Length: 546
Image 1 (cartoon, helix red, strand yellow):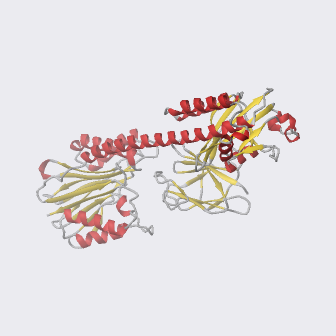
Image 2 (cartoon, rainbow, N blue to C red):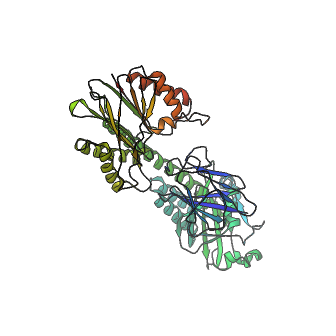
Image 3 (cartoon, rainbow, N blue to C red):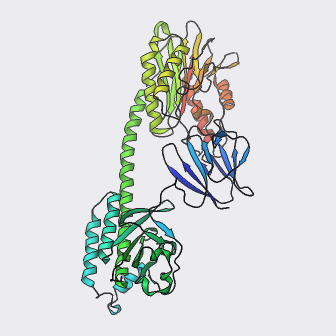
């Protein structure tokens, strides 16, 4: 029952997973076999694939946003059929056999299995080639020595300069075909576990799987000098249909691994490739492989340096957008802090002083992390600052914000948001909650109130009319706003910090100053998480009526 999954992300990324009779769980959690932590529409453990008697079984694991099988929502366990389409979060998953699917990647090179290599095939390792080249008595050091030396010098010169990989691949194929006077050539490299075509001269290639396997797994260089002289090639469809008379396949090998192969052939020509041609291409394959790896490392290093510089600048800019200090409001203590799990984050908090000693206090959490979430957060902040002074009713403000966010928010993104006006003189909190973790109002009496009235997250339902509520508070009462990076923080055992622990901690610390409460919460989080790293941005805002 050989089966595989083709998984396509919303950004167009493609991944093929072979199913091997082991249960596979998919979700946002890093503990899942198939983990997609940035897909916020997935649950932590969203679904599972389980081996069945005939076909695999799809199981929805109680996901929040559901799993679609052929456009029908799944409940419980459903046996799969070849070609079934599964949608979960931003993922589109096809259940397939192990034969290549047209939806995966149209093959430009066909790997056939109609050719069996035997002891008549000339095979040679890189080590043997180097030894023969250094041995004058072998005859290899003198035969066409000048031509081989010139080819290697050309290769060294052409491969010395840094080139984009696509250009480098084409140069390598050109050098390989020129060196042995081949008519056609192809260079294939590994992308993950897949061997893909990187450059060609000519077209219509069909490579024997026997040759490919031997080259990439055993590191052998293969020479077939004249296919017409050997009985085993006369019936080989790979050879007959292409009229290939002579071919060479060599590994692209570095000291530690094989990263691909070079194949050249000469259809319908009299000249046969020789052992010297094989030796030359084997050495060139080694030179080319080292150059490819070096180029890849340079590209990665430069990209990382540029990204690090940009992220550092972005983090500096974002940090400047947060309140650098809390405003001084008579009868009120305020404190806030946000720590992104990456260089930049999608959490947002703010204090906006209003007339008559009131203050607007808010916290938001953009779905996702990193730069995309940061950009959406910045956009939200600009909208809030431009609109806040025009609306006295927080429900109306959330309704207007939601319309703007929905118009600009990319598919699959949304923002949880809580906004409130604190009026110390009147002793009131007027708020509206757009799908955010309900803030906790810890009363001096010991009573705990959660502020839940409002509506769904921003960015989903454009026409939704949000509601609000006004609650009273007294001197000594503490209001705590937080993002889900607090309640969903996990330790090494994958236990969640949880809202219950946070509520108990707030009750125990309610007599402290807001700055002390803030620091105590972060310290308790660090103690709880231990060696585990934060999986989300962590934001805490504390207000206390004095």
